[in-house]
Length: 84
Image (spheres, rainbow, N blue to C red):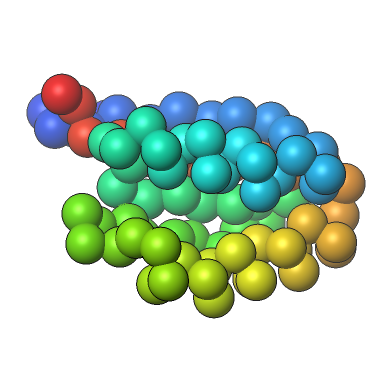
């Protein structure tokens, strides 16, 4: 899934490192959307990110991601990034 201004990457992580990997991805700064899927390809959550989404606004997202991490052991994180 690519276009002129975006590209898509996927990362496989276990439940314990899910939040750490998402934080790392967000800090890269070019992320438009994050999709968390289980090992069967079922989407658990899609997180749209905009330039204005920071700090306190992400607290409910971290709570949801933490709950998701407790549900399964293997995840795929899909990341839509803006090309720089």
